[in-house]
Image (cartoon, rainbow, N blue to C red):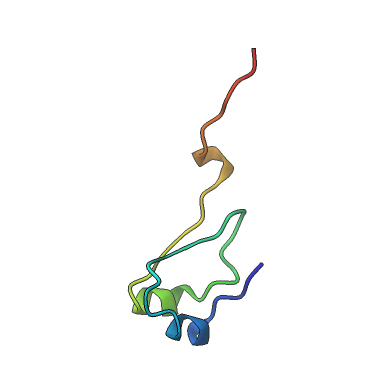
Length: 54
């Protein structure tokens, strides 16, 4: 997992979205992202389409 803290976010002036695949957002400073207007999301397996095999 990548650590996304306030110092890293301060250098990313064009960043609009942080998306973490998997579970949890422990490595992301959500408060710092919110302060900079950056959206944070974590899609789950339930949100992905399921393709059934016949």
